[in-house]
Image 1: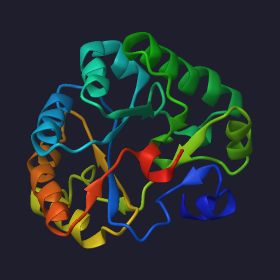
Image 2: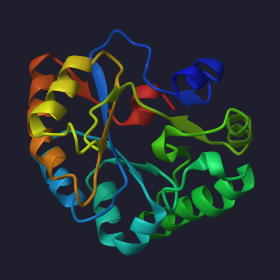
Image 3: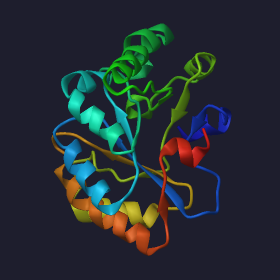
Image 4: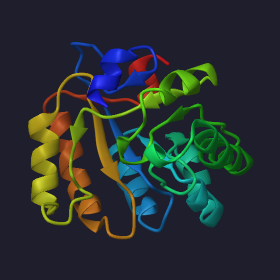
Length: 210
C-alpha cells in the first residue's frame, strides 16, 4: 500500500506525518475469543487502540464488539469474510464486504465505520477512487509486527519488530485471532517499551485527523 498512499494521499494512509511521538496500535480480524485478552491489557495500560473487525465475527461475537466500543477503542471495517479484494469487483467489495460489516457493527455497537483496511492490504488502484466517492478512507500500516507469520512470530520477535521499527506517527499492525496468543504475550512489553521512549497512543482516526 506504500505506492497507493503516495498516489492517493487523501484516501490511503499508512502513517501520520508528524514529529510528535504519537503512535496507533491496530488489531485486525476480531472480535474473537482472543480479543478480550487484548482489551484487558489495553485497559490495564490505559491505552486506546483501533480494531479492524470482520463482519462475520461481529455477527458471531457481538458482546465482544460492544466491549471494544465501550472500552473507548475505535472500531473499523476489515471486510465481512476476509476475502482478497483483488479478486472482487468494486461493487462486490462494497455490497458484499464493506456495507454489511459496517451495518452489523452499527446494529451491535451504534458505530457505523467509514474507515477500512482491506484484507492482506490488497486493493486495485482503480478501486480507490470508487471507494473515495463512496466516502471511505483506507488505512494501511507502517510497522508490521508479523505476528501473523507463524515462522517468525515468537513474542520476542514481535516485540523486537514493534520497538525497532516504531516512529512518530506510526500505525502498527497486529492481529486478534485464535492463533494469536503470542500477540497477547508481546503486547504488554510493546506498550511499556513505547511508553519508556515517551510515546503516547492514539486511535487511528485521531492520529490522522480524520
